[in-house]
Length: 216
Ligand code: DX5
Ligand code: ZN
Image (cartoon, rainbow, N blue to C red):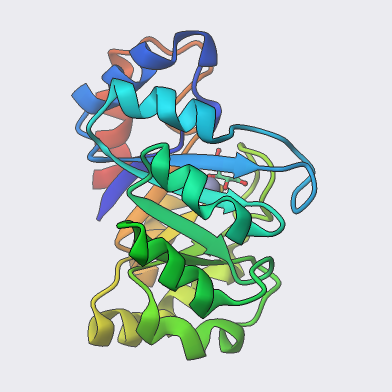
């Protein structure tokens, strides 16, 4: 089980220091939250910022596209340096076509499911993915409370993950009180935004915070 810091809660006025701090704290991946103000009620980063992040780090960059018409932006986000591109079952018009585009451009194809969406909606695609992201909050903002019922989808996806070899990641509301439930459900990767970054914590604390989440 690995903690994947989400830069959404980082201090963007000192992004390179934030990235270096989580690298030094042992992160091997970074989670990048891309929001368009349409699919979700918030706007965050575009390919231009991903490109700037790419120049700062060799960590695996997973771009979580919370956008309408994701097919239009797969190429820009991969050219900007994304290693994995994760698209929502709720916004893609053709998941298999989008996976093909992602792979042809040399990245890994991820699928993500929102809390209200049924597992049955993603089940037919699980043999074609490199990565599964299970949302444990309704996407749009960091610092929300975990919707624990969504963890049932991790349990349901586990046999497919074992059969097809993709990791399961959860996203949203992870903190010291909820991380154990996430682990017990069988998740391989755990996104953590507000539990790692911000709140005026000094960089030196990041290693301790990530260790604590890992070992809880
Ligand atoms: C929410 C994003 C998350 C967010 C998680 O829409 O997809 O990645 O950064 O933040 P926390 O860990 O604070 O819930
Ligand atoms: Zn995310």
